[in-house]
Image (cartoon, rainbow, N blue to C red; front, side, top):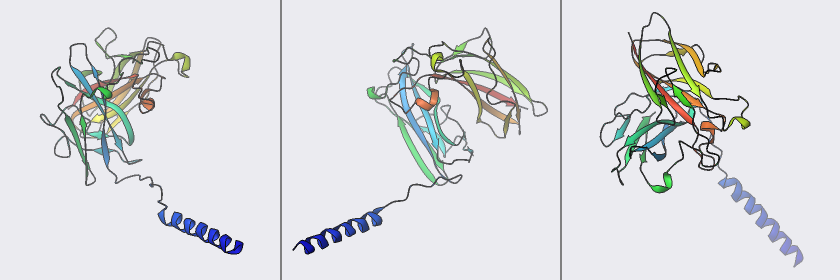
Length: 273
């Protein structure tokens, strides 16, 4: 009887092993190109005037492919105007807090859907004002840390948070353009920072041609000034994005524990002749 029981146990173990082998699924393989892009709704926050800002980002599943998807059937927000300031140039992998859509105080239970069609796959995501999706984009509740202040003139208007600030410029193909920003931080996160201050990172946000930066992360002077050069590969209308972040984690910490602070967007609209 003991021999029979041992044989049964051994057989059952072998069966479990075979079942486990049959149901094993390989982990997804990373792809450099050819994959989809998912829009991401990341939450909302109230504005001083009673309106609300809905914040969106995206996940480009490609590890190396930079995608250009103009506003239109493959890149639109609905209902209403299809252009709500979303990017048309998509960097690889996860990019959070890329833009914010301001909706009125009486928006209520309505929804805004961002739709992207990339490499034959359409993915849509709704933005809404559900209470559980409120985010602390302008101040970290844990330590009162706030986003860096970003200016395009030393004594000019400033922006803070995902909504950021915007400026208009003109350039030409024949020569590079100098862009200056002033970024200042409140210092709350400095004790945890290896840098000891904010960082500014430049990227192409929209435009018909290539964009080349002298430095994508220019050094920041004690006054907060950061200067870089930029040149364009084709005439047309461009938007450049300046991301000012501190060492509190910035965009890297968005998905960790629900924290959403602290960085600021700056947008430079450039007409290239």
